[in-house]
Amino acid sequence: LEKFSLPLPIRRLVGDLMECGKLSSNEGKFCSLRDVQLEIKQMKNEPEFFLAQGPCNSNNNLEFKETTLYGRTKEIEEIVVAAHTALTDRGSDMKSVVFIGGDPGVGKSHLVNSLKQQFLYRGWLFFGAKFGRLTQNEPLSTISSGLEAYLRTIAKLKSNIEDVNLENNPVAYDEQQENQEEYVNIIVSSILRHLSPAGIVFLSGLIPSLKALFPEVFRSVVMDDDSVSDCDGNNGTTDGVEETCDNGNESDREDSSVGNEPNENEERMVGDGSSINYDDDNGNGNDCMGAGAYRNKLHYLFRQLLKAISEPSHSPIFFYVDDLQWADSASLTLLSSLVLESDHFNNADEEEARQCLFVVGSYRSNEEDYPEILNQFISEIDSVPSVRVTNISLGGIAKSGTNSMISDALRLPIRLIRNFSDVVHKKSAGNPLFVKIFMTSLVEDHYLTYSLEEQRWKWDIDNVRDISINENVAAILRNKLLRLPIKVFEALQVMSCFGVKVDQDVLSILSGSDQFDELISSLGYAIQEGMIEKRNETTYGFAHDTIQQAVYEYLPEACMKEFHFKIGMHLVRALRGFVTPEFLQCNSITFLAI
Image (cartoon, rainbow, N blue to C red; front, side, top):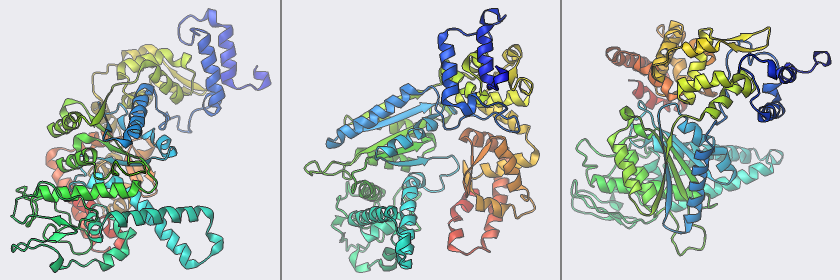
């Protein structure tokens, strides 16, 4: 067979079939004809993995398929069925919500994000928001980020279209741009129809892209003292919405008229919407209205914005909220409003299809990360008769999923890695993140090596079986971190102070100081080690939030405050030399570091 230049995997398959009855151990034996069929199928479907010779890369490092989801067929079906139910119920008052709980590393966010393209292809709008322990610098910022990403794209498209129109170049204006212009105009018109100029200004404090999308609004909106209520007993109305003025007394429910504008005394806006005050330290809200009335108004504007985005094309909305265990109470209250209130849906007597909002939330269910406010939030949603709640408890993947995962990583057929994979599965309890970390540690400790002679990965099954694993994922991660070069470890510590991701421009500014001069170059090494990843041209992110947590928690509490202070003060000093509008968008991250 070698004479005919057949690939080594094919020669190995034929040779092992011929020697099947003579193999002294179960390692590599064919258990049934199905093993033969599966091996041939792997070669046919993925020749770049199972017919190629040589390691996955020049460094002989493992490469896992990050985009492949293993062993979650049942859970995928549950989410898809719940989404289909939400579409079916869009003509009624019923709603569908999915909650996914599980330990760190089991793949909760990977499960949902793997469905994103499928839902986008079916005409859904997909909004994603991820909470973090270190990113709650202001209430509602995480929920707002889901809408911000979408509206930022719309604003960019609008800007590009305006540039093309200014150039007046018919050659550059193709059919795709015409379709984009039509879509952008529809969305812009819909938002203006559902939100008043003052409402747009109000929300821009949480969704900055509204400023870029509606520059004319921010140029023309003037708060007229005569058109709003004051605290001298002259309590008027704004767009038909009555508000009380009793310094803490709140209205039970505000009118759901389109185009509510915030009372000037509710929030002292200066025309750019840059300040949102949810309530004061005593929970009394703003000077002229109660916290409850203010909250209702803010929630109403969010609901109207969702309606404005989805109504033109009747696109159902898939809203995914990750890491709910770190959500603030204001955000959970807003989520409840989005799910339970119905004024952002079309009226039942309207002929067109009603809007559909499908919310999926995931959280860590381990005891130390599960707060009481989250338990109350889930219980509240679950107790409402008009909400169908699907609870998914995500554990480790089955043994067959681990087998497929390791088979792909080692580029070997399942029958050759089955015994080895079974040992790894038992030690990792099927936790996908734990599998990756454990496998990587086997390579680093030379229990798993690449044989150039045999052109495949090799291992001693007995040595692997004897390895004692009595630590959790975080403990193993800490051991791995201690093996990193000191400069790389310090660079990861700097990154961890910003949360799970950080803008490259901020890191570049820090690298200008003597203390962090090797920051950017050290992160390159961390990328090779799989600790972090370059998510786009401008953002670095940890490969998993568990890694960020392990790095951050390694800082002693006494040193943590000083480390934050040094980072923050360097950024504050650096900001003095940057006065461009683009850079000032990084202000919030500066205060976060402090």
